Length: 249
Image (cartoon, rainbow, N blue to C red; front, side, top):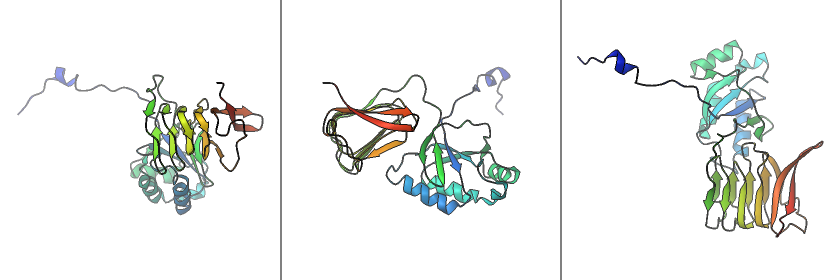
């Protein structure tokens, strides 16, 4: 029989506190099929956006009668989108007991930040900001064609060529395009309001910063369309809006 000394056991591991980035799904209905439809529609343009992201399910907005929530069904919906249900927030006693039995933990003390995506039945809220030592920028040196998607998680994105119509570039930080932007560009994807989008030729199908969008249906002015320009988020009394201005050359 093997004998392990008490001295060696003290060096087997250490237990430390940690910050775990997670998204929060704020439910406004207990109708899981409606949630499934809304979530599928919202993520259709960005498949894999929340791959392997831990999720806290916030039921604080549901009434006490809504304990009939089909929690196992909701977990299946989230896992179909490669999300990882981790905890529940704001659950009453009966629903909390169900959640615990399903392996979730009670996260009623979790803090909520600004939304990442929003739907009529579903709000997804951004996790805490990334660590203070950010990753270096992701660099793409080839043109992006229709159907291609690039996501720079936790950092800036630099594209050295054209982003063609139907292509999509996403970054948690800023996006720099040293070519024409003709597809979609989503900066500050997890709520970074200071992110910006730069392009040598601004011709986008869509631009977005921290969840505020502008599409090609809202035509750009002549002084920025097809010209070197930048996009930033401007806050005012009427709310947030995108400001698109020429780059000084």
